[in-house]
Length: 99
Image (spheres, rainbow, N blue to C red):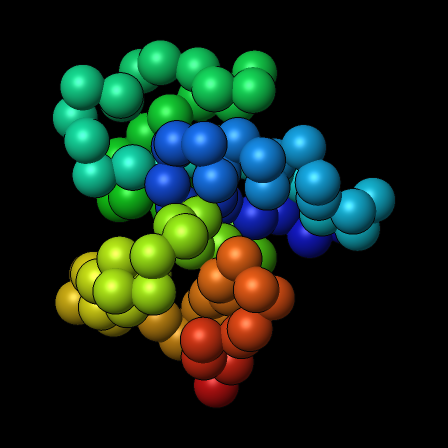
């Protein structure tokens, strides 16, 4: 089973958490909104993107409906050095593969 962090603790992220297949285990939500940190959504903790790495995910899923917002999230992950970890978006597209 692969561990996934759902980046975006909103409606899209909550929907994704309910739709994950049996091969995936959502370990937490990551969100930039400090007000959400420490809360729970769909029984998963909401953490900062940096703190979510402590859950040792295999990949991140960008949970945003807006393409511009997804690109902003991917850019943030690149800037934080989280790439080359696989990152996918809501459409199942792999943003970048590992190594």
